[in-house]
Image 1 (tube, rainbow, N blue to C red):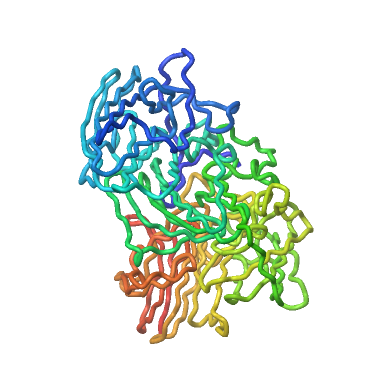
Image 2 (cartoon, one colour):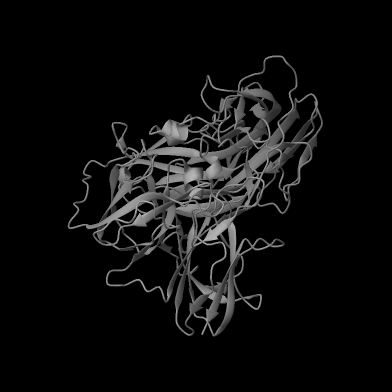
Length: 619
């Protein structure tokens, strides 16, 4: 599948626009910015910074790979950089910044050169050849963003022109400095080739997987990152194998640092356009892991490369992770601590899960499913369940799941949100301890045993991690419920709502399925008892706003957990069930004690027809 795709909310849109070419004279080459060196000259408490915006040639993949000509920032007299040069100072620093527009035929608007926090952006409008100097105090500590756009740009409106490579990080440290950290900036560029294909560059610190930097750490290290979304679309950022703690959520202009009691654990965090976050985690298991955007179109070779795949390419099915992934992906290797030993597995529970294809149904071109074997007899080879069978597991109980591939193509399963060994994580050619001991894909007719030991109760996901767009939107996804020891799953009070896509049609909004159905029958619930509502979004893209309504009025429910982790007490509160956003790769748990009546569970973007509706009758 070749695609040129922009996604915002739940709607796939066509990409337009490319930065103008200034001349045919050879342009300077862009340098990928790893954000380790601060720009400018610091003299006492004053930073002097001279920035230039000019055309340059960017190779976001290999040094010898395809190139594009883009407008990029540089420091005066230095190579152009993507992302833009890192602005990093301590609070109290005065910044004197001069910006020159070296483009010959385009006006630029510069944003974010203000003291923080700021109520509004004092943007600079520079015509070709113009320069301007601004003087301001850095302001309060935090992670911010500065950028430039071609022409006048309204940041409150979505813009199809993909020129976000003119963005960089602006970090203000406290007086004593910050603990060691890394800064990761997301930049995006794209242009159409024809009505069905496009060229796309989706990068972190100026490079696209597999050409970007690998991060290394040792078990027990505290890993601290500042992630800057310099693009005009959202990104649900997912970490494999571990929870991370969000310590701050920021924007171009303001910082919101969370006190310890308000910091939640997540495996996927939704980053809105032009936003930032500070995060940390402590890896307690060795191996290879990933941090990536969970929008399918942003991490697959058919949609996240400058040279789109030909129709007969097998890259999306390759065992080589350098081929079957692309775009917004970072590889992480955690080294074992000196005394680390793998925990012994004592009397594991054994399960058998089959990957199957059945007769086409719905809008997807195929019907794929995960089917749990129940009893001694395997299910019929063409039987499927969409979503895949609900897996009910027990906290602390070692569980070995044999995954049998009955398809005619390779497969892989990622156990999303599960704290597990790297070998079982489900990324073919990457998951494991080192390059010599990595897990293979599951070949047709073959099997793979995933070793899980669930350290916490909650709601999780399992899904394909191979040929992602086609397999995921054909049904290869499901939910996992992990219960406390001694508890039994009661479907009368425990309700799992799994939202997925039914195929892909780029000309239309996505066709959503809730528990495998686009027109689900009404639910019958009992009044006066606690019901646990488990919301799971595992579509190809789309941040879904859920509401639970009675007579168009949101009911009250209590927030319990996100991504399988119980919320801190400060966040486990009663709230209105109104437009609760659930991004791709997120799960949320709520407790609801309903009164008798008729209710609607919806996913509806304000001003648009609901993407799905589920009627609930309470007696």
